[in-house]
Length: 402
Image (tube, rainbow, N blue to C red; front, side, top):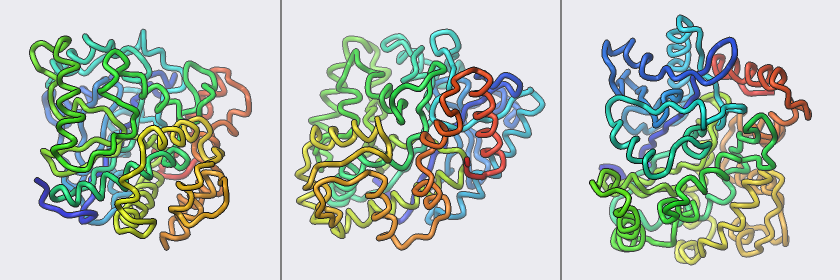
């Protein structure tokens, strides 16, 4: 059970690729970074406000708030300082951190190296069942937001708000248009691959947008128990039968009293990510308070209907046209169709926030759009290296990609 009620505190996690400084190829050094600080192989290091920890694959490191924070704005600098500390360590290994939700030319079938230390049995169990040598497992970096709730009433409000806002989140956050060295046809290809990463047991991911369940009992019956039942024949030792097996785009962690939003592509720098977190949490707070329509109305939204919007936004990002009139009416829009980026313009205006990074995204497009403009149709390895080298510089200096 959480100590905190709705929107009292926030937990944030940022995942980054580790790459060779010369070639920008993935470089599995996460374990060595953590060992350099701790003196032994560990899975997590507490460095005050921000902790460093491992992920499934050894070329990804996660930075996260050590405990939930009551203010988001200071995290821009807190994360940026830790990025620079890691880059300083990596410089002696001819490596650096690189942002973006997918590595643009990684071959996951050849280059995947799983974390091999603490918690390795969990990762090996995943690998045995799903084969983690694919983009949907080995080549995806995201930003996670953890939001608290107390009891079923608060859970229901928060879950309804998150489900309703999820379909348009990629219109703000898409940063994964390139994989295998080419344009994928999707501005958020990470989410496209994420949908299918557990296709052997589809209920683990579901539709990415969670089912319309608003109490612990409903969630346990309709999601957890069905999930455990489905994986049991493959996971005979029960290694994976826990709440974290749930791979929806927002997962309820009743053991912590929080919901974790996982569908946000990571951006080019911490300032961009935290500004997005500020806007999304403000929007969710307004939804959960009834500002954009009653909670019972939000709870009625069918997952498949939300999924139709979500699928189009994953493909086209801010240029997706939303044609569901009832969805638009919740935001006070009477038109029959609206561009997703324009909807975010309205939401941002209603928020009263003043965030330079959000204004840059709304004016110049998602990071995916800006990357495609920079590439300008040239998918040669040299051009991709040039653009992603600029991305790595943005991360190091905590600046927006132009």
